[in-house]
Image (cartoon, one colour):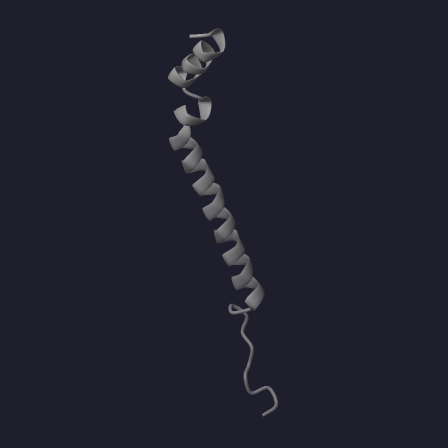
Length: 60
């Protein structure tokens, strides 16, 4: 084997940082995505005005 091939094999055997921490990174990414979706839903609910009370028969 040449030196460059040895470096590639050593790199693959040691594994990359992302492969070692894949579970934690996946958890953090899912948490961020779900938090953003939840904030968007809360904003849309507040924007729709469902919680505000409007009297339907204002003119009567």
